[in-house]
Image 1 (cartoon, each protein chain N blue to C red):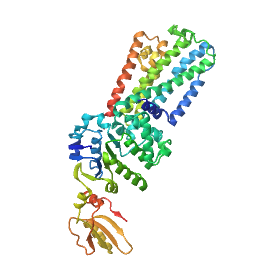
Image 2 (spheres, rainbow over the protein chains, first blue to last red):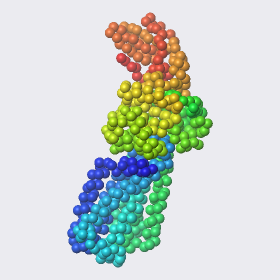
Image 3 (cartoon, each protein chain N blue to C red):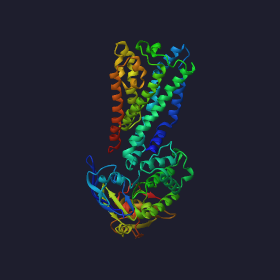
Image 4 (cartoon, chains in turn blue, yellow):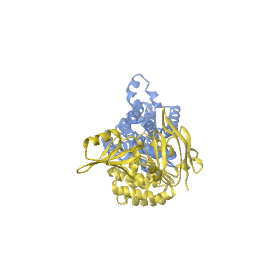
Length: 256
Length: 295
């Protein structure tokens, strides 16, 4: 299984186009943080961290949109399904590899933003409460900057695994990588797109139930998500991570 | 001894019988699978490799239904699909590591087997080169190596020599002959000389059904007295023969033309004589001739 995961990861990540977009995303992540006061810069960290979500989505779905369509087009699906472990392990290996791949991509972007912000103040002020930052102004949260960063690292990993399973499922039922890329990107990015509109009509808090905001948990704090919302989100993540691979398995091993 | 029994196998897609009541028993050795496009060869191979289930009938391996055997059957199966696109960003070695893991081989055992097979197919020196940069023939050799990774007892090869140069083809034939002693090898190809030189028996499919199965001798003897060679220097006679008979080959010499013709009846031309049939004649006789080969 370890060999399969390692080689699946290589198959998904080691592509020239992925490296080019990734390098560009990391550059943008670093330069997007500017030097203001410490509070302003740290608020900027979370604002830009969330603001870079489209780049995360672009990269993630570039990584795993073709995961199954490649197998279908290259006729490897047939070969895989005639092997002893093919039916049993390939879906699990792809799920883990895509989750790890997405986590690496998303964390690299978020941590570059963090690094850019924190190095401007030599890692000082990590204990600042979020309520001092304009981005979290109305939340009144006493969580510190460091705690929020650590929390986001965990939720970004969880969200990455969730979106990886979604992308893989869409890939397994598609003949072209474009479909999972567009649909997956749309499902992921919808809360980002409609946030402004919902904010105007006072319904933005409903977005706290979405996987994107669950992944970018600074949004949950900003909009004061309740404990029940967080429990529901954890439930959505678990259901997605457990059941989407089962549907993917059905689609991949279905007689074609 | 391995025994693969195909019993009354029928596969229906919509209203079409892709395989129609095929029954055959196979033991260790190389079996050629011949038939024109659409004859049902790929469907038969897909059922043997468990990629698709029969509509009716069953396949028995050593006394057990292959669908019941599941992964135990797949453990002894090697398969090379016809169109086979290896991952471009993998090296040959990584690709074989990947398939080895799929086949349940790991660690030192996998490493040794991969090195051995890379040597066998002549790719050891380029094992770390990206497969995307390989020629068609080299990719095919990677495909052959992956099919042999688990030392299969049933090896299904769909057009394995397509894209190989004559030297590579000869090497591949020798390899198959070497390993066929303890396994059932099903070789589907349009290259009749491959089947002629290595298959112990040939199965011919037409319209999804088994047209005939037998040794080369059995098959060729059925054609005895049906193949003729006609020599003529009259161009209008060439046209006439082409219109009246199934012409397999037209060889133009300096002064005359020699035609190879298959016919159930005696050919009424003065310079005609019955000749020994070849496998190509058999193929052309049973499967409608679409393109005349002119030399």
